[in-house]
Length: 90
Image (tube, rainbow, N blue to C red; front, side, top):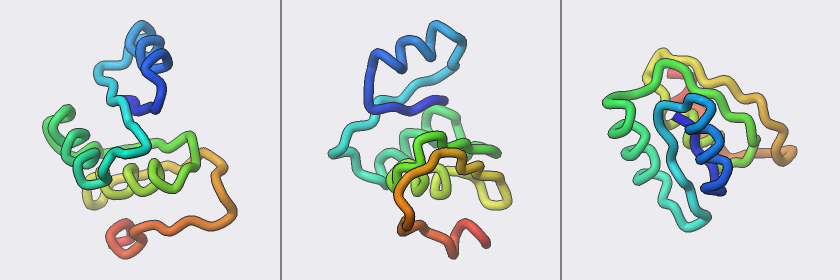
């Protein structure tokens, strides 16, 4: 599953082999996005990668990944982020 704010990027991802794509807008609600990820994947992902570093996508990676899973944060966003750390380390 790949998420993006631009449909054109998702179209390319699909052409390159992505099984699922999810268009995210600035108005997207966090809980709804987590639900959509779980719905598309029929469960929680074992591993999530965030390559943007944006606070909203880092949060999505941490919230959507299964307990005991791995969230890899690659992107370089702002110098400080507010993230759901308690759930991530539990």
